[in-house]
Picture (cartoon, rainbow, N blue to C red):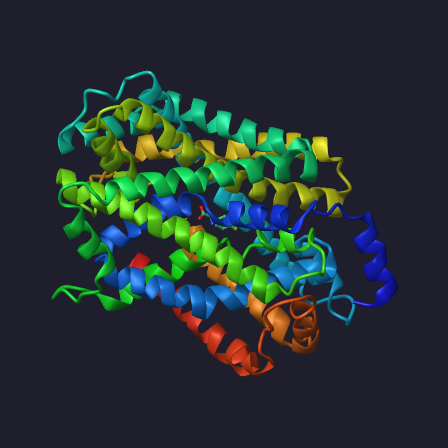
Length: 465
Ligand code: PFF
């Protein structure tokens, strides 16, 4: 990127009001259902401790470099991912236009399944508040409650549309007035709640066995280590929001005072803390109340409803917790909406309001198959909660779009036909703080894409064979 052009772009772009605001926005995007809903059920279905070990390893090996790259691309270009791929390479017209288009559709696919699950969290919040869940205690009762929600597409649609309305509505107010202000407050509240609840859960009877399952890696006889590793890799991408420009856009709103390796470490630490705390909560509850840990997507809903219903004041605690979960999901939705809206503003010159409206309609309508498909498919497919449209969309985003998008970003930063390693390094290391080591070039250019490609292949293999 040459000087005058960059100055012109930087001047036109809104920025976050502070470093804290930027970090909260990026952490708000990363921390969401992936930490509190997806992480515990993936860990539960994949043997607990070993999955967690792989997950931590991949956060470092894959998550950290890809996050640095996404943020650097955003900060240098002051554009959404699509515009950055077009504008950053020196050779014009750029070969890199199409892949960024893939990244844009990734945001859309994520949203059309994420809004449905966020709707479940809002439903549980309201049902706790109104006392509708109070009488449930056995595993069968708790699971039936979840199944009856799945069989009620009217209720699910209502909460899904409410979710889309809140997300697009907040984005309509703009970056500082809307997105940044709300996210800062919500994120702080979220951490306090999560810490207090998981500390409490540690003292439940049986919590010790839960922690052993969750934190001690072991190799039971029937373990498919490749499946566990594949699951952990896709979870690492999902939880950090990597591969489709969801973080890149916040790179485009930040200043150059701090090095991006430092910012990445801070974001990854917050995200990992949120996931680990949620795991403590869910597994302490499961072992304490005899709930199977491999319960799939409903795990967090029925395990925690169980915990709250055994507690004095559980109705209040339950509503507060599901409020927290809804908040975590909403902050992610807001930031992904922001990404879609920024694309429309940058590329199609839409006003913010118009872009928010268009997104409300498009995401609202495209989310309906997930809500209705879930319901219809359950009657056709004997496995019930497996192989629903939600499951398919989750696979499409986590195992296909995110790794594919991440490989493209890695190639873009390492290749001479792309942005080039030299320029990436100069950008990522601009500002105070930790340096991204230059000697990592071979790791980044060769080993990293091979590792990600492996995940990509594994995702396809595990699905079809
Ligand atoms: N990281 C989010 C979560 O953990 O819930 C999910 C997500 C957001 C994935 C944005 C990908 C993305 F681009």
